[in-house]
Length: 385
Image 1 (cartoon, one colour):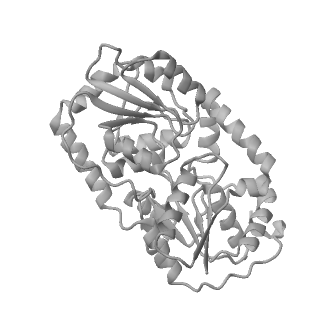
Image 2 (cartoon, one colour):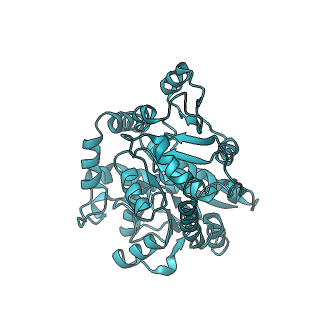
Image 3 (tube, rainbow, N blue to C red):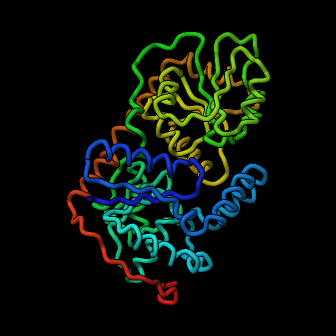
């Protein structure tokens, strides 16, 4: 029995979990003698601390985004600093080693930076592990990701591959352009000409975060007949109730959707999406070839994603101080721009080399399935600083 361990982070339905779930489903549909485990390492290490951090994180980015940006750019976003954070290494390295001993995986897949960082440090100290794959879920690589001792890297595009090769001195044969993995149900929409009224899907992410209130003031009023909107409120029950109480005929709130098939149907019915630049949502909608308009970006990784995607002209940045309908009109009334955007998306998708699950199967079936032997303890003093 082949055992694959997937390591996301936090008990929040983020892209780290969505990507892991998508790969697990694809693998499970193709091989029977395979056991996939998905473990939130933070909860494994300290459930109380994970809960406190999770609640603090959500409140922090919502109420004090500027301080979050400062912390992110100084301690997470790539800099020339090589400083390591010994305070959390001391606490978590031994926990990570214990997890690997318990699970005895044949392959480890990290969909978030922190587990990758810890395993990289363990391997740097001489501790043997199963082969490790980093699966990057944003359009950049922050400095928390372990890279030096990680065996394989699944990256969103050729630019990230070139960056890892030149800046991190990683062998390009160990880097595979898989795109940000999405569920296989997200196939391109059937080509058809959009007709009035255009149906626009609005997403604030699973938490219903982002500058939704500002966006609502910029949406067309009841007299606008060219657009209808469906708003994905995620788990934000207050937002759902507030939108429903407005009773606007052209604005329909939708509560949290866990079914990927239901979400896929919503993508199929839409003519465009207004969203935040989360890596997974953007990747899903690029695969669906659904025009993307960005209403806001959470501080940290989403802002960096937004800058990157804007440079590639894969998204359209909405100015919420200007009527949204007029900005949508600029796209839908310009057939040449629609063709250009479609060509840019086709170019992006054409450079994806393989599906993540395909490469995992190739790597897994091409190696010994005998469990690795792990050391029972980690001497933190021996871990290089």
